[in-house]
Image (tube, rainbow, N blue to C red):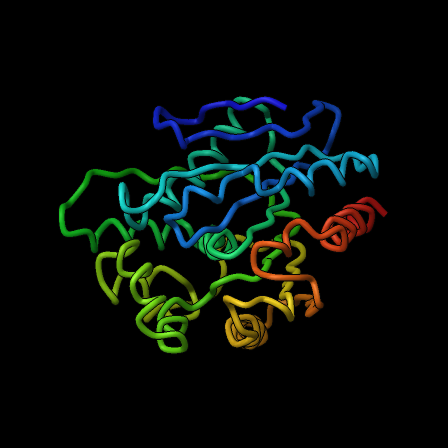
Length: 261
């Protein structure tokens, strides 16, 4: 395992759990933590990476860290994800990617599907204007695993009130900005710019921080768009346990086998 920097900030790093130039698949893991918790890092996925390697799954496994609030606000979390992927393309010749995001990592995975529009809107709504250029990612998205995610931030605040409003307000400069930051609540939205071959939505029935409301509304949104998906609502532990579950690693492993079948 090695750590590589894709930027100058200490958190702009990728962890390479496993990599072989011969592998045709790469799994990128995006941690959660409400955009602000330093306790959540790419090391959240140590058990998953070990499990996939023990199963001899032929896949590169990498995790990404990104800068956190309050040092930054949206859209810089997403910008770091895009920059990290661009680094993988440039330095590792990785063009075919599976993504697994947990919690706000799932939010970022969703944002990735329309990253150009979401970055542009996010930058324009900052109180202090910044110069920006948005790269054109030349990647193919095989599969996205959305795990116990947040998909409509405004609805999250409506459901949970002040405690959740507090961390949202730290990560975004306005209600308009966080409404425009995810596709289900965007004022103008047509379809995903990226079209992953497969979308898999996972929700632990024992998650104490997120009810099924976010997941069910997200699946309804996918149905509205006519985007196929599969879903797994399982008793896979608490919010910070689900990504460590062997069952989730099994799901990733089986999905990879189906891609190659």
